[in-house]
View 1 (cartoon, one colour):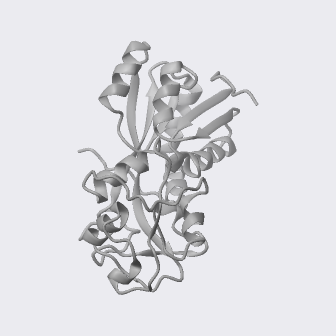
View 2 (cartoon, rainbow, N blue to C red):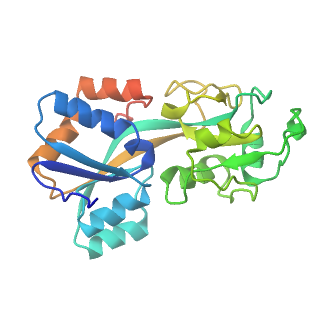
Length: 257
């Protein structure tokens, strides 16, 4: 099916699967229920695709779970596309294990070693004699890159990755030795459990001590956005928009003073 082109009647949004799988569709539904006479065409294929689609002018709103890179900024400049960056939410990346794994907590050091392949069997942490199997997002995902920075000191993922196209939560649910990083909004999937990191449970933004794996989520908006697209962006900031974000499992953006 051919993708729709952005117009006054269709809002086309491309990019991050973290935002595009749940939050953006729920905001779109709320916007329509509030009376907006517009349809949405949303494709969540990774943050990288937000910028390629903006550059191709196949959308005017891009979703990203990371900031635009210098290379992407140059690509947009060459395409004659100017964008505005809007932080719309904050996301916590949780660590999920198979529900049958007896390990109940991890440290940041252990997380790094697990995802980089320094720890290859759960028995090394006092668990069962089961190989560690890593589930990740696709390499175009902002989470794939962000997690390497947040939790792995920029190192590469271990060779013991699960080579599967299923969502990471399903991969972990199906592998007794599975481990994955997930957005907080996806932490309640069946067959998995979320563990605290250095004694800190996810679920509260700005806590003390803070949860270690937290990041901002953005919309990048073309300066040629239509009035209805601007109305949608304003809806996101309303109390109803904030409530939808909270229900889905995201946290409010940091208020700039």
